[in-house]
Length: 353
Image 1 (spheres, one colour):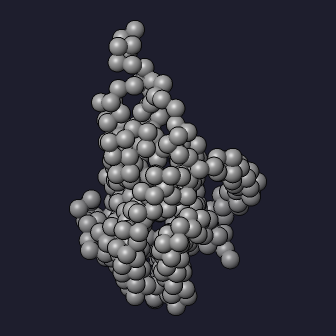
Image 2 (image 1 turned 30 degrees about the vertical axis):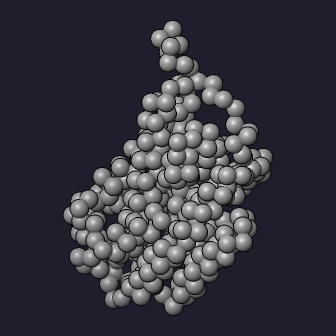
Image 3 (image 1 turned 180 degrees about the horizontal axis):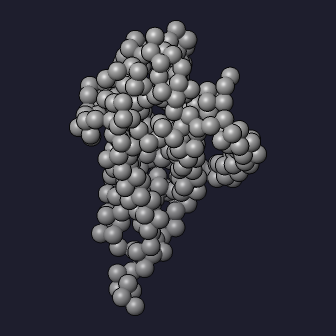
């Protein structure tokens, strides 16, 4: 295995980890106003399920983006030429969501909390849709010219296959969030999350199965059929576990589906990192190899850069994984409405002091 191939796999692993962990974060944000409708305590229970971990989950995105920039600068630069607005929408949505989560409890005012709830919802819906749209476009191919610039803008990304990809990530993350809430809560909140999971399971299975089959038939390899089968098995496992109130197995099933779906996209993409729909010779690959008779353009950094990155990753990655695993272990207990104390924020009359 060459270093460019190794770093392509590393980036795939980083984004897979991000979608598994941040995926249920998005699902929690989407479901919070539904499960907690008209009940502030229930909303706080739902939000507290991700309270200790959501910011750590976002580290996977920062690391994945940084690894892409350092290992494949041509990929990073060309991607932003056509996906700038889409990625900017994701960034703004994530910032809005972060601020809303951090400041929701700072003022004890129903109007303030409603505004923060709206921001959390928008900050969860937009990335859940946009990530599927972006990665489906990358896999399907874009209008990448000889100048490494993508034509078409944001509207050019709204094609049938990517739109189905956006719907896939939205529904899958919502189901993933529902089973996570059921895993992390007890009592009435858990019951509400399980009901939502049972309702979502069939449409999620249909949409994920359809998108996965389209991906496999259009772009997959012989070995990626295994990944599609694993994604379906994960959903079947999740559905059976939800019916039997086995929350841990349900979460394992949705996590397996997310992992398999992302791996399917990266497997279908390889050895490309950004295929061109204009001319195959303009496509970017991990190392500039000949693909289907066309000499492609290498997107990778120099060998020295990749060697240095590999040593840094070998030293720091275990530390990060141990720390994040410890965080999840410490905050593993279930939450119930009885454990939530009254609001401690500033009252409206005290805000002017």
